[in-house]
Length: 299
Ligand code: HEC
Image 1 (tube, rainbow, N blue to C red):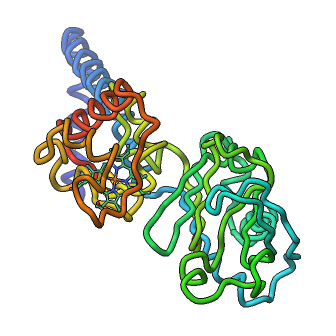
Image 2: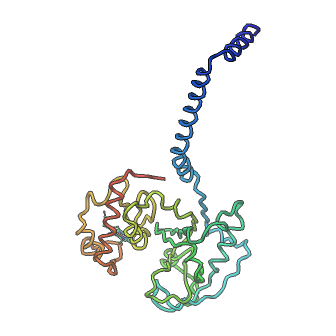
């Protein structure tokens, strides 16, 4: 202990007696040390922040079936869907207002990140029993009144029975006055879960760097049923993980298939997609190709 102390004193004395250029070396060394440090820091910062989002996405998943047990303050209303997009006629339902349901579930959250976020940057995923995952931004979802229907008042039985019940229950999302041509609003049936995710978190595994238009077209037309890197619907097959679809399907076959799936498979469950322009389809293909050329990110 004592010898250590005397060594220190010796060092200090040497320091005081040292020539000026010795201090110069020390200062130079310190300067070098600090400049390296700050360079490292600024280079690492963006990398250090981004992955944290991936590890801890504020993700909220609600199980809608709990509503069927009663025990909640929500009041069901009678609703008329003037243009029912699934049944192509006017229909009446017993239903809960979507906004009430959302408020009810959000009120039970400890930390309500949804309230402080921009609704245009939040993705609502309507998860259905058959693997169909419809999505809309929260802003669009709340831009018109929508309802979670659970009883069909226009049918004889005043309830879904048999095959229809299996298809529509527990909930069917309906809108009051959306014309048939307006495709911005989704009509998921067999709806059982509601998921809210920040846009960048929901799509971070599939956002492109180049083909943004292609991504948006895929999102609007295909993602409900087809996943990419495990993001999206499960009704149809995945298109990028582990192998990109363009490695085993020709573009011309995909174009012909989506226009008329039954011309390839008599039993195909995919509805024909007729409204896409060829140029829009090409953009989707460019996006899929870009995704295929990148390292796969899976959440
Ligand atoms: C409503 C759901 C739905 C939508 C929307 C949809 N698909 Fe499909 N798709 C399916 C299902 C289900 C299959 C499974 C095979 C079948 O039933 O023919 C399928 C199969 C396919 C196949 C055959 C793949 C294979 O390996 O068997 C291709 C290609 C395809 N879809 C492309 C598309 C593209 C591109 C879009 C968007 C422009 C799209 N689909 C939109 C449901 C859908």
